[in-house]
Length: 526
Image (cartoon, rainbow, N blue to C red; front, side, top):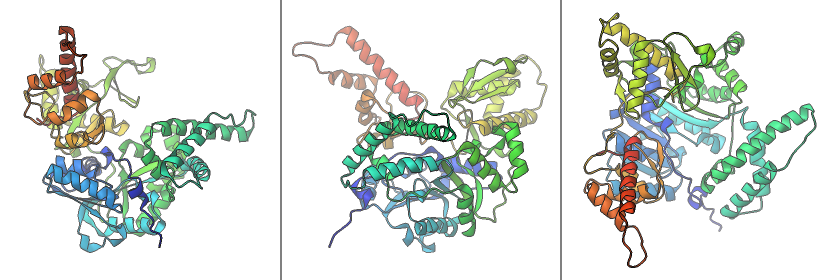
């Protein structure tokens, strides 16, 4: 009798955290659209396909009064996660080796259900079960997150995937399969396909661009991730309207996308959004036409029960109780943007936001100077009013300034989440380096197994050698002098030599810059 090893046991999937799956992001969007989701400080979360818990465990650490359950078909990955949970002594998170087809109503209700990187990589009957779980196990005011590959963008990637699988069809060793697949894509990327000026050559040029992008992408992608993403036996992309037909058949309605700006037709050129409006007869059709125009390859869809009343008109009052932060930077105005008192702010994705409103300008500067700190929007209004009206009588009431600023923050957030971030809950981290710095316990545990750790904003942070050396020592027992002595002691010198004063100064500078980076990266909790 031949035993077939679970492919995720044979080659565990590369683990990471995903900011867009955090209840903070999901609840914020639900709130903006008029829902009343469960407070994330006291909620129940279920993750389907949790692997070893790299996404779920940091959530549990940051939200100690909430409950987190993860299920995965790979006992090997679950065991790894259980070991980490025991090491961290977390009592609010549980991982189970379980087939999602075994989950029924007795599993309980959850305020947030997450299925990231699962739906497209399982057979149709399992896809149906995922949707069933999102209906039967979702609390009445709950929100489910499902990510999946989409057409039309995946049509060309399908060709690339099929070429990789064809090249490796007779290879069983995972490392060898990955090596040969990478070699094929590199060969294709370096091979001019056609130079003729025909309609076919235009298509092939686009195809060759995809090959080039895929080659660069795979060059950076871990083997374990590539084997389970591009080369997994099952990979079933679909059109958005097809996904929603299935979701609606299971009693679920469309809420939004976890990347909120993607659902805003206003981010398209005016002529395009007007054209879509003339053709589309429903919100689902609007979204599908936008996918066609953007050649979209991936979606991260939020679903809720049909009894929930969604109001898609963004209203300033819904920001009451929320927090804001901004990683933007001040930019130079283009010629057509120049007007009296205008200022331009640019996000990391290159998108910009221009405003002439003094309260909004002051708020952006306030948030940028304090990044990555999040600020209660009510406190933000008070702070910038004190600055703007420091030497003159206010021309508007606090309520008017709040409504105006909230409306502008909503515009900026709808433009780019790299412009303004909105939060339901402030991450529990410190922005300054204390006398005895404390690195997040999750980051300390993760640093034992690799150089990518999860910060308190549920983002991935890449550590260098100095950070990795310091990580296990940042438990609150060592002050700066002790840490400096440890760094100096780790330097290997030829016999008889000692550190020069210049070298000691360099090590001290490296220590201070590393600790400052950790604080700026939301990794320190004390």
